[in-house]
Image (cartoon, rainbow, N blue to C red; front, side, top):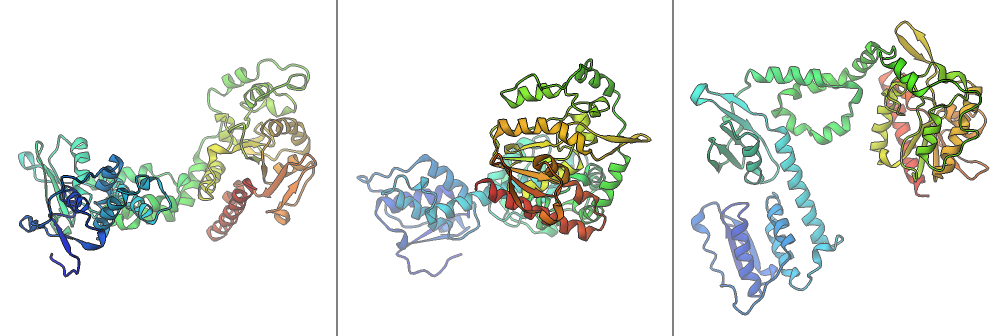
Length: 487
């Protein structure tokens, strides 16, 4: 649609993503030294209106721009911002005298370009993830139709993906701005549509909801992360979305029930694992007469640890895990049932809570070292289950030898004591975690110890409101840890 403008030159493009038209006009303008302030860009869908009356490219003018700019401009032109066309020409104009402009991350125009590219790529990803086809017709008339509401002009750019993915079926994707149609041989891009043009629910959607409900894992639910990846604005077009509020509301109860049903009697291979990890008991304490220069060597030594009686019933030693040059070491209490069987720390329900909160606090799990004050699972058998039992002072002291060796090799900037057992092992005495939570204590050897709760404490809280409050407190602690990591 024509617009009133005071610019000396008005460029009319045939569509919102008419990159060929934009590039041709921009080349003519730039080679004739027509500044961005003198150009207005418009979109007129009527192809007959693209008589821009622009001067031809000057034969003596040389216009060279990085190939990277062309590729990035092709992405940014799909953005819905009406100022994108002017921005792209301004960047092209500046590149003539600033050839390194694209590498200046702090430049306002470059930052705006990057934001546009990111938004377009994200919209493309969302379309691929959230398009849901509905079947219409039978036999020769069978085809699949979907309705989607993108934020940007991405249909044409994204259509080839759906051709590759669904080559064998005939389909149409309708959006407010454009539609893509594949008849099995030819792809056609047409005008936009309205949601009322899309078909109603089909029989397959009931099966999809059943599938989604059965694969939903309440123990791994991260509501904020889920809504970030699946924003609510998409829910109205997703058949499974009607289940989400109910599944979220019942997640804690479902997770508790799932854990209660989980068989915790050692797996059938438990005896074989024990035989592998605990050959024949030898007199003396493993490690006292041997040395290790690396964490892997220390881990191998710990496999034969008999420093306390806990090794007799445990499946295996659960040693620490993470980089040897980690800035921070997290120390828990002892392995749980799932850690004992897996041979890895923090992989059970408390580990899931720990991972989730680290993620929200912007602490990368793969960059930190996680371990326990006690390396073997201490439990009491109750029927088919093995119930966690708190390690005593003697067991903590016996295993402290391994923890000190770990810290000596890693030399972390900070150690986080997760709970009272970890604090007792690290500080050599019992400390009131509730009162000293958030404190940083420096040991005689210079190691700084940050005190907080163990994430399993959050799982034991029954009232949802109290549980959420405690989770926020632990998240606050982890954000403080994040600040201390670089201190």
